Image (cartoon, rainbow, N blue to C red; front, top):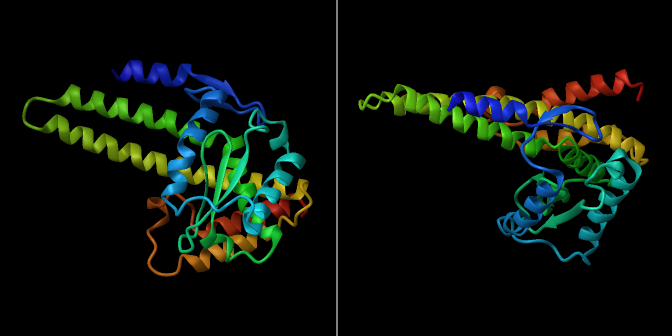
Length: 250
């Protein structure tokens, strides 16, 4: 089982058409688009539903998102015709996220904290980066690998005493930790993509640093250690982006 799992994972390699990166992904671009479209209504419903597209704030989100796509290499990606930017009614949750294939969401709770269009562009550019880099598809492939390896560990060590089940739990825990680490890498990659896309679209890339300060303020109170978080701490992201911008002379 473990051998089959590893073979399936490593044999499914695709070259990202935008970044040129070799990635282990088990679905096609069209499958990503379909999955995103199918999942979007349920995800929106969990956060109060989508604000009417004719609403000024929703229209602004859509316009900023389209400007980023049209003026950055996202417009040359296979997702160019699929990107859609949605505003969700949740006024309390401070969040933005992207589904596979180009569905991008931001909550009213986050939007109301953003003061400028450049800051909105920072959030949407970051989420656009997740789509272009195919992070969700990568994470799904890694999750499938981890689940199969965990099942293999359980079968291999099961002697009727529960030891196999314990091994599965340990394997699942290790897999979860690995996923968190990869997710933090994805977040940093999306941050870098976001500031580049902002600059290409004519926005001030330093506004992304302002966004991170806003997120830092929104996360007041106890926070888990960074190793247990799917996102790097805001302080880490700010330091990384400052160094990145300085290196690019921005």
